[in-house]
Length: 401
Ligand SMILES: Cc1cc2nc3c(=O)[nH]c(=O)nc-3n(C[C@H](O)[C@H](O)[C@H](O)COP(=O)(O)OP(=O)(O)OC[C@H]3O[C@@H](n4cnc5c(N)ncnc54)[C@H](O)[C@@H]3O)c2cc1C
Image 1: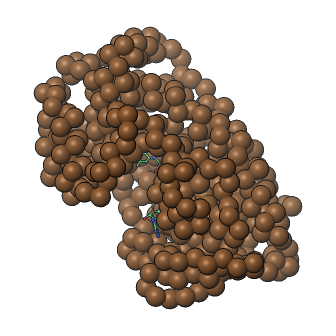
Image 2 (image 1 turned 90 degrees about the vertical axis):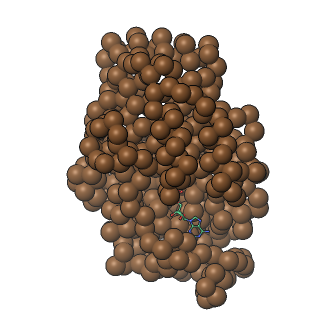
């Protein structure tokens, strides 16, 4: 591989974003001999966070990175999901695999921050990380990209990759406004932490009213739990996005219910110092690169958390992009191959969204009643096999090409 790389002139690569796709891409690019710089707007990699899934093909990516044992040790092992009627009485408790369609041997659930820490640990000493910084301008030339950073530095790279999430700034700079690619799925959500007053442990509890979901998610048996309040809304509330006060007021007004823990959750939301508010949306783009700027992870193809596949798409996308760059000396050919060979897997996973929505977020009395009926019968079903979309790509072995 080293011999192969020495014939490649396109060695200097800038990656924007150090969450999941960014550090995974940096790892593979470094392994293939590229010079990598990662720029991240936050002050460091962020620990903790909500649980995410690594499934199917993505498990093979982390195995090839040598981090499978570390991630198995960090597995959060959610043992049950309890669904509640609107009055707070239980409908059923299920093993989580029965509703997610996952559960094939080896799928993992870890805290997002734990995955980031593990991925970052594979490259932190080998590639340049610029925290507290971001790309201000990108100027594309036939053979390189001139970049100005927010801190004023100017540098030249052979390629720039946006791994900066659903609202990617790199995408806006190279492809234009997000609206062109943003497919709103009719829900918004607020996430925050609150005291674990119910003493929940290794479990999630979901309460639904038509078009409303309140969920508590306990990782282990800790003093705090993750709270989520999500709601159906035909149009995204753009006016709330720049205003945390408006976000709190909007969510509060939509959850007047006096049932279960909803009032306590609304009170906690009002005080939370870690409130995260966003739309539930997908990013769908006709192409994932423009000249010498490419996208990976949520920036290219966010599937939304309704699929539970965002993390896996980020890991697999990073593996495929780095591998194609390593084995195609012409970056344009490499970017084309990355897209051709990854698109089917991404499309299959984005298409999962309908199923996810009806189970976790029924919008009407009728769909909620049907969902509850379905859950009752599910409790008696044997565990489902893994969804074929999760494994819809067989990873090439780029090291051997
Ligand atoms: C509440 C919630 C629950 C979820 N549950 C699941 C789940 O169960 N399973 C699952 O697989 N996925 C889940 N997801 C989705 C998953 O978190 C994302 O798909 C995944 O994090 C995408 O990784 P990424 O690296 O592409 O982008 P992100 O994780 O969004 O990271 C982007 C990074 O870029 C940085 N950044 C942003 N802008 C700039 C800039 N201008 N300059 C420099 N850096 C920048 C950010 O600080 C961040 O570090 C969930 C998401 C949320 C919000």
